[in-house]
Image 1 (cartoon, rainbow, N blue to C red):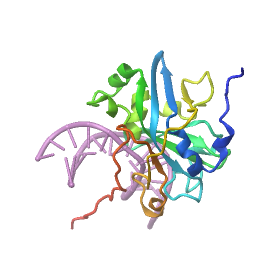
Image 2 (image 1 turned 60 degrees about the horizontal axis):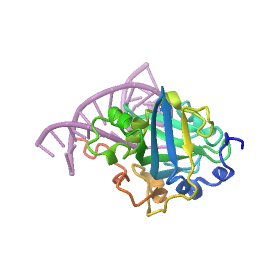
Image 3 (image 1 turned 90 degrees about the horizontal axis):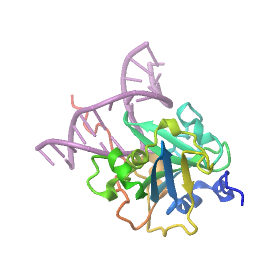
Image 4 (image 1 turned 45 degrees about the horizontal axis):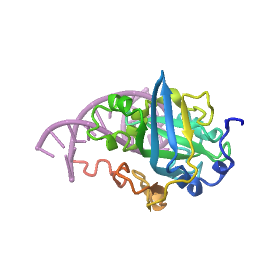
Length: 209
DNA sequence: GATTTGATTCTCT
DNA sequence: GAGAATCAAATCC
């Protein structure tokens, strides 16, 4: 049997339609022999250039989001807030620049290693509860941006579930404001690792004189 | 060239 | 519940 090195065909369908199919998938990193695996329980869909004001790709290709414009099945990992990394799976046909943000999951393998990377996590369910936490628990940084998730030789791999986990709720996306807030593209499972919802934070509500 | 903001998290109150 | 931490890229003039 040939190993699957390419993304399945359905990953080229519209991102909002396929995002729920990532629920229950397992993202596994093998960094220097340390293996951590996370079962995904929360995702968000981000569409491409000109379509989705909440997406990094909305204003076109840039240095940071170049991976989004590549072929599906790659990891798009970006740096934000000066200290955090967030992990996505590129979907859609090459050039469409849509992606699914992996927001939270349950560590099912390598709990010890994940705890070492996330010393501030009080409970195991907090290890990968939130996009930056998930990336940190897996040890993912910009170094792994562009990794082919379906390549057996890749240090970061994604295993798709035979049957996705049931979608418990669909909500607007966390931290996305403006027109992008109108689209309910956040898909969550009924699971304690799902991150708490926060509406788009309004920065500087008071600009004092 | 300077300024602003961000698909966040942690800690303290 | 609020504020700080901290840096790259995008935006504005």
